[in-house]
Length: 299
Image (tube, rainbow, N blue to C red; front, side):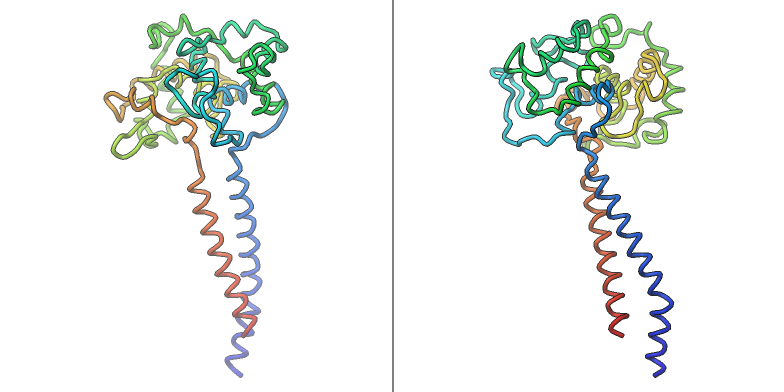
């Protein structure tokens, strides 16, 4: 009788807490599942040039892409292959001036929205039809980026490097400490974008690919909340100064350019492994709590 009475007292005392644990766990599980969907494009007000800039960078990060998509037809005869050939930046460049004999889009900012749309939906060139891959909102966002975000960098970069007269590295250091230090640390090595054997730090990107770095600083890093010029209240000079300062940070590679050529920018910020682990842990907690409840009821 004492054992039965003790079990009843335990059940009466702890069962409400167990129910609370179950409820909280379910809430956490739902939150984690929501995070796991972060890669899907969030529809909002059309004409968001920051989102358009991120789509320009790697639109396949936001939309499901058929693995059999293959090489873009406009790349036939060229060296690159796969999804990379479908990304806007691969053809038109981080400086929007064009790559591998493809035209730039700097002058496209002078076109009307309707004229830009003609290029995106294939009316000007049927091989350049992205209407089957983007939503209407996404196309409007890219159009707005071309109209508002694309900047002529011809006088900002000299032979691929930032011209010193456009950069205040002392001011850039101040911006770095205010906006970047908490994630990347003082020397930029806190986050390794490469591997233990071949590390890649912020300094590698700033030194070896300042144009790419400038695009990400200006418009944010995909779905990671790094901010953008518009959200931070910055102007181009602010972004240039920050990029100029990152060129001075320690690098993981003495010749990082070769590694950067094969670097998959789309993988950065991918939380899939973390989310999967978190889900497994939540499931374990749920099973454990359920077992305890069933055991208590059986008692």
